[in-house]
Image (tube, rainbow, N blue to C red):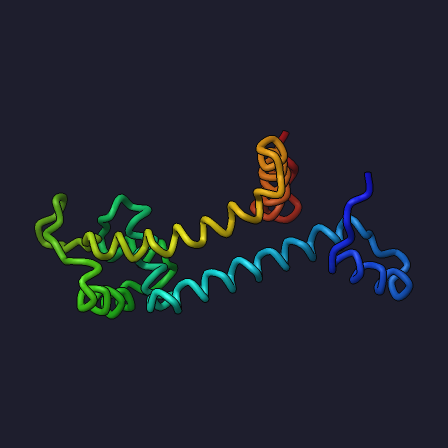
Length: 171
């Protein structure tokens, strides 16, 4: 069975005469990953605009949700790869929108933590559900076993990026 050609197949056809040594499988896989990433990024951007949720606010809510709705500002800064002082402005904006509140830390009485409110959780969840629906729509083209196989194959490729250059491959 031959797969239906897509835009990447046409891209490869154009480049093969120009770059005779082009590995069509590598070019196809990488170009498809790039196109899928761009598509999902565009969907996320549209969702956030539609929900009046700037990306930096969504990212902060996402980190908080991933920490079970509560974190120290220093933890947020680390997760977002930001300077701790920069988190204050983000938290202030989310506070004004009613998406978070500041609460005393349970581990250090000198510290104040940031906690998601129900409104903040709902805003984050609304954006996540729409994005997730698109991810499921795309990967719905594959059977469950194929999705598992794709995930496993991409894990192997990603592990190469996580390994220091020149380090031996783990078996």
